[in-house]
Length: 321
Image 1 (cartoon, helix red, strand yellow):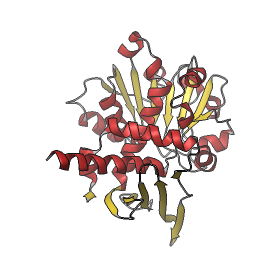
Image 2 (cartoon, one colour):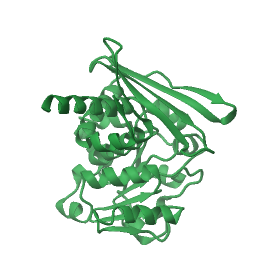
Image 3 (cartoon, helix red, strand yellow):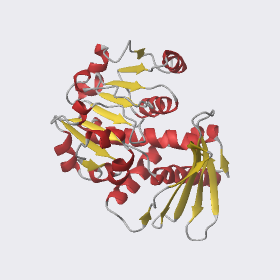
């Protein structure tokens, strides 16, 4: 069974994906032996910038194994291409192949929403919920995915967009104009509306910090997903290192190797997201009155979670038919 980009968009249940992500991230942080994720392999192709990446993982408990194979060619369009393959871990049988670009975009955004739900949304008063403001910085693939996921799973009073390419922001606003009447475009990153934001998602490939401590209010929650190498960063040191900031990551090991904000600021990581799941007391301790930053670099188990949702949803539909 092959799920192309459109099929992934149509059949990936975000609610079920949240459930599977919660399980695998919790078990990952518990170092559950039934969940294994070896280091990814990277093969350079001709130019050092061009590469072929393989990211495998296996979940013996659920009975699945998965590998994402992608190419990264910065000068090509699309920059990233590839597939996610899901197998039965008992028989080795191939169960499905799915478009890696859409899987990556959706699982990244849904993991961001999971972090937001745990660290922020679950603690809001009725008044905060009523007036909630979301800002998305960067309006390309990840910005699109975050707007889709965050507005599908939660009702926001205001949504603000910003992109270095203004056309991308205008196009994204227009795309959602029939569904949402609350989307506005920020003038710049010193716009007062950024400071008003309760949740911010940074989805850029920036190599220079875009947001510092004075641009956001205390208590904001930030999902930083754009940077994935030591030279890239979206958040400034004064924000990362503030005594009022706690930094949560998807994986300590991966963040210390790949997250530019973590590596350059040398910030102490407060927790992995999996350590916050099913741990309300600890979650309250690290988020109450604090600015929280969820820095993700992406894990193979998140691709696995999305592939499981597609496979099991497809099977359920076939049974119903």
